[in-house]
Image (cartoon, rainbow, N blue to C red; front, top):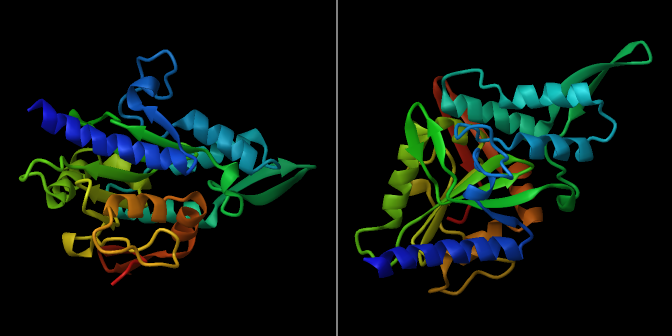
Length: 271
């Protein structure tokens, strides 16, 4: 069924083009793979692009010495618990509140913060859209369609289904994400948003959300509701992933509820 394969790739290409129009650098994962000349990953289990993270942190935090930057990177890349949702909650706090570091200067200890994202100046960050990123973890080999990186951190995953295949639904894309969460959990410790689409319909949700909490996004500019029949994926991409809006959403409109063992991650949406 060459035409069917072709159609899913068209949706992926459109997604990448929309992201590029918003200022993201598009890269096919093969260009930064461990065995490529311009590799940005040492192994296929690496989900953070460490060199991008390091250079971004140096730009965003010009007064922090290199040793403290390395300390911050260690804190971000270390997973403290086997619980994915708890790791995600801890990372989100580092992302929004900064990473506490200390260093010596003029014979005294300075207590400071390293910011992982520049929330006030979107252009100060590194915006990357990578398609077909192979991740291998515990012998599980998985390849999400599009992964969004800010400063080398994989903060969103977009899973697409073929629009011409009646059996390939957005619910199927949601189920695929659940498989990824089980098989390659390290990618999702850093996740802020999950998107599923078949090119026409599209939904956005958080790491902990069940299917009923995956919602459409209703507007691109925040002023006017998109008309019925609009391409929902384009509305989500242009409505959420415009850099200043995405940073606002991450910083101010995502919360965690902890009830005993249960962790629920919630984001603002349209009801």
